[in-house]
View (tube, one colour):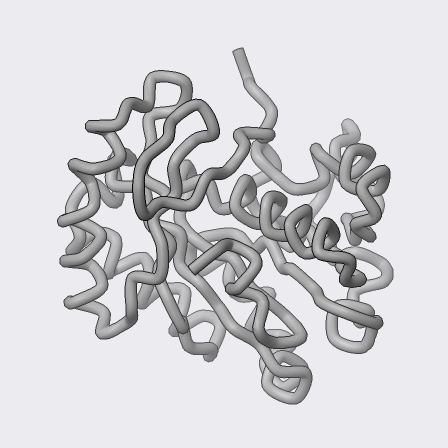
Length: 218
């Protein structure tokens, strides 16, 4: 499966815990949809954690033909929790929508507020897993976060994206050694492991290559 093939419904929700790389997945997915010639928009719904958000890539995405839906004061000194002013376009706009959603119960609450809209529009929701983050270093910890998001949103996950990496220090072994952990999470959650990603400087069979375009703090 390719990243583009995840977008089978009107709305594709990308969620996962802090540090999982969910924003990078969401942005790469939106770019892939646009490259395929389809109308696409990305909604920054990560209103709890302002440090890694799709709003950081708004200018680049607009140049690529991706419509961006970001909170009015995102990335300003008055950045406050708020939905994008054109939020309903997520469900009613032409083409496809990608939602970048905060990855815990508080962050996923925004999904619960529009539960019926997601159901009516048609959605798929995917959990981004990174074995190399403290809270999800073991599949059991990742399962707790996954279930927390499900409870807060009232929505179901349809698959797991194994995005296990160590940033610039990621090696072939980093990626391959994490696969059994992702498979165990899939087994525990009863949700299919759909794909494993790898950074674009590695060529690993049976993985999906993505570009790291999230901002760097240091």
